[in-house]
Length: 140
Image (cartoon, rainbow, N blue to C red; front, side, top):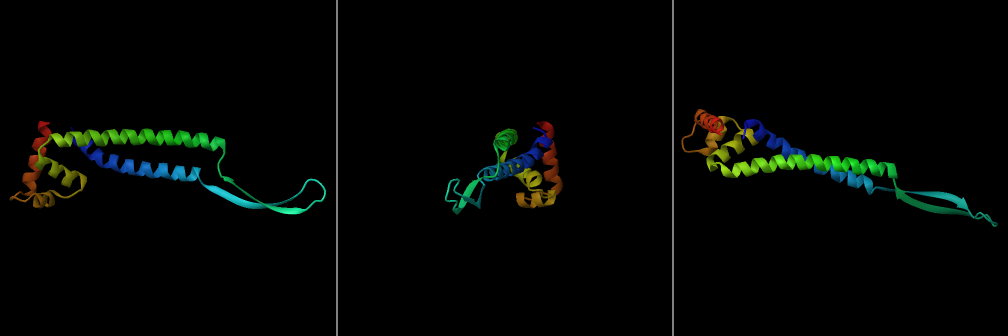
């Protein structure tokens, strides 16, 4: 596992969330209805004026095909991001708990080495935590 893949975890989680929002927006657009009232008359005598309410969706079959294509692309993008997320989480379970905490705080939450050391406690310093992380990553 390299550091780039670990930092990609954050982007993958955010991408999953954004993609789900885009899919919800597309579904809302698909179910959007519009209504209007029109005036007409009987085609035969007596020509009485009447008002009609009409209601329907705002997109056509061509738009529906594009919508399905876009949904498929979003689903593929979400699946790829989900795979990255699962791969990193599967790897995280196999490493020591202390290193899990260091990675979570330093890489994912963006804390400094000193803040990470303070959260770890037990007389850890920023440099000691940084070196511990570097040794661990070079050994893997």
